[in-house]
Length: 473
Image (cartoon, rainbow, N blue to C red):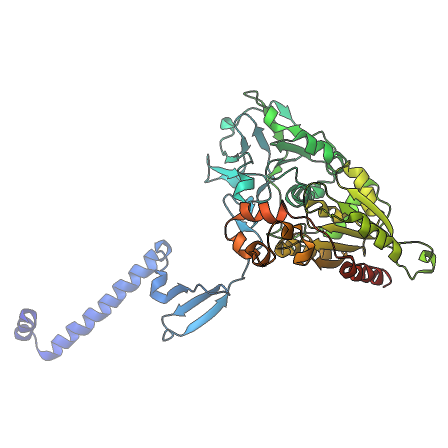
């Protein structure tokens, strides 16, 4: 108000208008000059001024972008429901639902005594002297298994003077993996180690050095032929390399094993240049397996040949209590029957499995031997009470990826030996889900450790006839 009264006394109305317009023009020129001179140094305007970002927690994982200048109307931009490999720092390390690994192209130095893998590269710029912990076993979400896996630090170093000196140089890349976890269980041997190791190492065509942590000598002996096909070099037991100052140097390497999501015994061809068919061909070359395709009974050349049926027997639990009767019935139907337990040397048992056209067994680790069956063979899984979900995830789905023909026989309560211990209307028989709610230990103790199977031959005969029918196709 004071300013207006002074202005009115000092100048006419016409002059006052001139002053106002001149002031506006001057302010505009000053603002324009300011933006022109300082534009290169100005940061972008805060995103909040132009866009409001809102994430909705929906099943389709959608990103909702609301444009504040468009009357708050919503534009939908879809984000994929699942990402193939979610990156963790540094850029050469990745994690999937099943495993974590670092695929390093630059030279690496492995110091066993400290459990450290040192990396010196331009990739490490800006992240000097930081470490990432890797447990090189492909069952990341299973805390029980991972408790038995040694942790390794992957450490970035930009100053080469800080790197430990090499005491042994290798002219090939390295792969470091663990024999811990559930190694020793035949199913887990394949799904947690052998298949991921094949995925990780096959690209090197043998010119790669394996380093094993948590080494189990009987495991190495069991898979010796296979390991020698994947690597031309003797395995290094890295945990025994405890001399302080001993450092192995390699031309890059992979710390950990690559594996595909949560599925068992499967290679996802959309995420790999390899398939389960490639893996099975690799196994045939490892163990000199002759049979690539199961018999087709209506072939003229096969009319005089009987299809071979392998019955996998078990000694401790989930055994066939009437295996001899099952074998006699199968012979009457036209099968040549072989009964064997998967406790012999792997190479010998692989040849037995590969020679057969049908494999029959109760759900258990021994069924992992379906990897040796010829293509188009028939796989019959006998499913005890309460283990339907395990049977589906562990063997039904993988068998289809292996180009096998799958048949399932779910036993009735009367075919389980559990009815000798519990009344047929007991919750153990009637409601297994209530036992699972008590925890895995209670469930495993009852349904996996204390249950055997006595097949109803009249009922099961139809499954064997179906297998014969499939071999006619």
